[in-house]
Length: 122
Image (cartoon, rainbow, N blue to C red):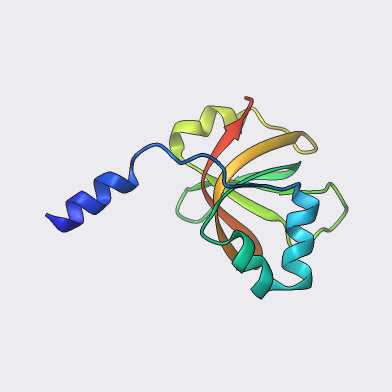
């Protein structure tokens, strides 16, 4: 019963963004000091705006969009994962397009991982 209660509460609507930060600033924080960046962003709902690099699916078919500043060969980037319910919006994106997303920041694993994302203003 506890597992069911926990699961149902986590499936409620995402909370509002706790932090709003341009993608360039977010990436700079993680490049310069990952520990400090995690303290500031990890576990929080983050709203960020940046340039779409790639629109893909991972090996388990989860939809993600990489977002950066638009610089050539940029690393790391934000890797924003979206629920299947937003597949049609993700399908309408193009590389080079500027977008705003709200996501739960999970820290760095090669890229800055952002889960349970939603598009803002789309």
